[in-house]
Image (cartoon, rainbow, N blue to C red; front, side, top):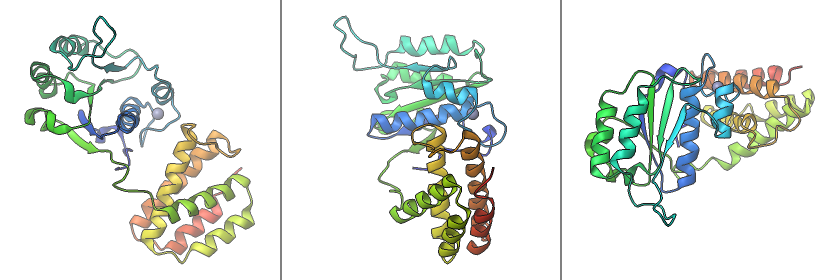
Length: 265
Ligand SMILES: [Zn+2]
């Protein structure tokens, strides 16, 4: 899956369709995108640290509104999202956000919207109120009207598509561990031992390091004793290095930088 991170909130589209056969995977992608939209940090989003990112993560952000299929009298989930539910979104969408500068409607199983509901959604997607964003999660985007799809940026979140490179992940873990331990000599040796990687392989390692550190910031992984600030700074450093590698700066130079700046007070 494409890395869901944006240089600034201005890069975001007003509506996304997140496609995956896995509910969990769609949900994860939606959470990241919602955080990116609501994040209050300057610069790249989601930052993972601000109040808005935290609240999205904890599922308590008042400006992230979820729409899902209703249940019938027996508590069984209905098969479709009905037009009344979308009409309620239309009405609610003109109300200003509570806390953030934007608000997000996350439509779960958007591919179960029936045709009237989709047509109602279409009007909203054509002329979304200012500062309103839509995330449509779908197992099968083909179930959505072409007119709806054409209004949205589509993101396919299939984990299998870019299985992370096992070797790159191993090296990334080694790198982060050395930084976390604060062992400068070991970090230096690691950087020297790997500066012979080609640019692509080195970029993959940096990518894995960034992913690992973001997992730490989101508390999906243990920060190995590093403070949040350390994790954040290391993530920023690695992202800078990744940018340099993409500009064809030599691996030796970039890994030299990681060796020098990887450990900070
Ligand atoms: Zn944030």
